[in-house]
Image 1: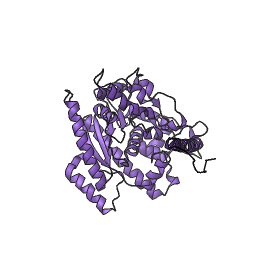
Image 2: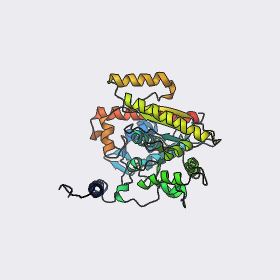
Image 3: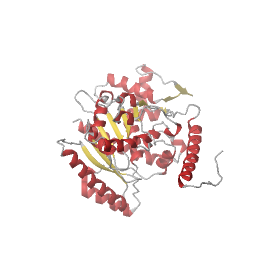
Image 4: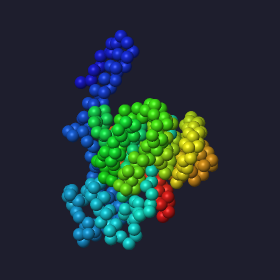
Length: 393
């Protein structure tokens, strides 16, 4: 049972310590209930209709492939209806790609000569839906057949939680900090874990990652430049992935900058309000100054795209639409043409540390679910096209 008695403390440190302890107990109890018995998330099964849509084929084509034996039957068949796991759909993609006359139709990832795409999502304004955008992009790309690595550079670990690793439950594995630290760093491969989501791996974050900021200040000018550390770590594993998605902390510190240096592309999520617009302006201005410092060292930074993503968009809200129109007028094609809609379906899924792709349509109001999923599909599809363009396809 949770403690409900008033907290009695004689000092502020004692008060905050007891507050933290109560919150830790509540979080641990909740997460153990959610993820019992093994405290691990599992990806739901997808119906034949969903699987066909995700694979980009018709239901008739899918049934034909099963009847011919060119693809195996899924493990779960209930009352004649097929249900597919993420791993099974990934396997089917590989089989269909092997016989396809259009290279990349089912596995659209890198080919020989294509450079790894590293996409950083960053903004120092809290509430910009940065982590929510990151996990939806990761899930969309993984379901589309890309090999995706998610890197959580936020010590709060929001993306890590979305990926099913609960640092609140005393996760003891290596994290991205262990690959970036100055004293005896581990190989990047040791800091990466498989997730429950087929096609998605994660370099998780823990609170200790905040130490990177202090260590960088102390070690300034010694050894490898701080902004090169993540890039070098990613290079050591790049052959395993098509796309890397980096979720940055809501601050323009050393962690964000090392991500910015490693990135081949940048997406700045922002909600359409005057306060967020002003904050984003300051953020971009500061980013420019810091990039100038890096470039003064002789480094040439070149991003395939540097784009704004409108999040929590409400088409019925006139003032917010004026901000959207202003952004499009100012930056034109540097604003992702689709927007991430404000949706109770996405908010409810996020409360459970899930993306819209993980929840069942039947568990929500169908029109609300469809509207939310269509929105996230559109954003993911446009970013995928930007990736393909960077590969000159």
